[in-house]
Length: 133
Image (cartoon, rainbow, N blue to C red; front, side, top):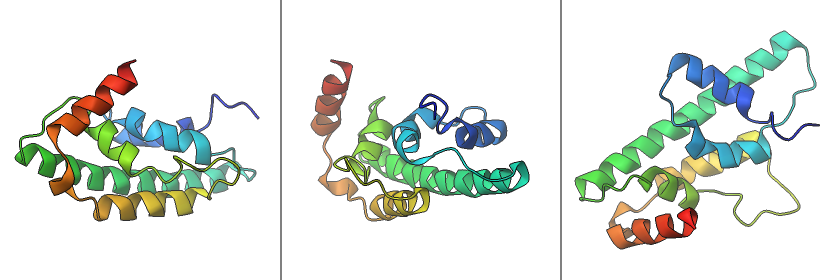
């Protein structure tokens, strides 16, 4: 199974609807849980639409968190990546990965309970320095 194609069909459906969708924020999670579907093309397309809906719902929650952070004065270019990294349920998962639906449910619940008051500008800037290196 080629590793490079995973996650692209789901993001492709979102890019068709929203050409400026921030797919790179969600790609690290999709790369690990969005796999090839062993079903007919119509069935796979329906499942991809369901998965795209899950990612879109998480993106709406992510946008809400980023908006709340910006209202607090935290406006860093990497703030979306920072928040998504904090909500990534796969950061310590090595051997057993959850299913797609389980992973995105965990992402959505983490985004819903994300505490914007605990985040400082220095936290985001420090994380951005580590990712750039």
